[in-house]
Image 1 (tube, rainbow, N blue to C red):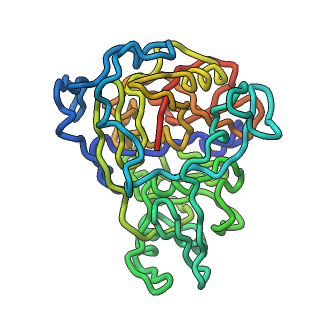
Image 2: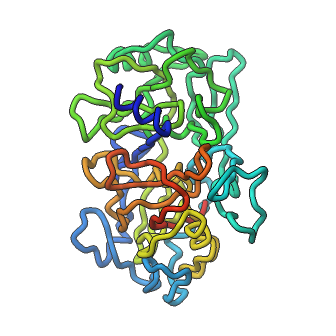
Image 3: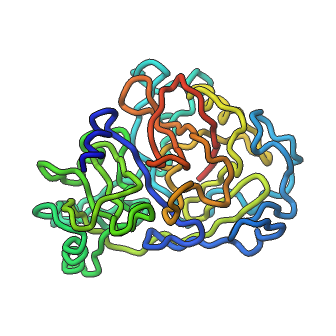
Length: 370
């Protein structure tokens, strides 16, 4: 707990949320590898690096234009009808590399393309007539609106959720890390969550059902002061807050191409290899806005909530999904609420998610969809 307080005293953050590489272990859903995408698989378990009909060249280069021919790529198309999607934060917070902006930039202007420039799958949170349950319109998950009477150990939290009958419904459980992270709002601070949910008067650390691969006997927790979650988690015997969830997880599969990886669970298509060049935050945004890859020009720099879906929570060291390459610190499009800082993804770092000065340089990974 002292370690977390030190982190919050300095910047109030450090986020890590996780997804398993081929199967979400406790969680928001199953995710498999498309057998059709396994042609040319090399060495990496469950991954593939060559799918017939995909364009060659430029995915990991620093340039903004793909050198490959426009062919194939249908397996990685976005926005399948009726498919699962990943909820965006409702944030409209925008910044340049010095301070917050009164309004987000217009298309074509400097700093256009950051998180607040795109409102994608922003959920509505409907409160039930009883006031006990909140429904997420994107994931379809039902959430306990009011928190438990007080902090409790992990075992007590599991028992507590299992005995709930909110709005006469049974089957409540502790959420996975990814599920709990889905309701974080990066446009808010202390708490980083929509007012549709209630928060305790003190204590903003909440249990998840996801075990920590880094530390035996620990579970991941989410800190709703800022949306942070450290890799080592919290010891199961220590008390934390509890919010229960009801509903099936999201299911999907990864389709791996030479240049892109498509996740049908989130309907996001990812640049397989992050850039080989490093950029300041504003330059990283511009790089992705100008990228043309597999005949698509609607790429953008990924938000922090999108990047977190690339984490493999079963790993102790690098937490990047093995289907992707490029494990150096990479920018997100999400500015923090601190002037001059933005969230970044650090697959090889202790926390996995952290912040950096916008004027510093890191690599970029672009995304498109849903």
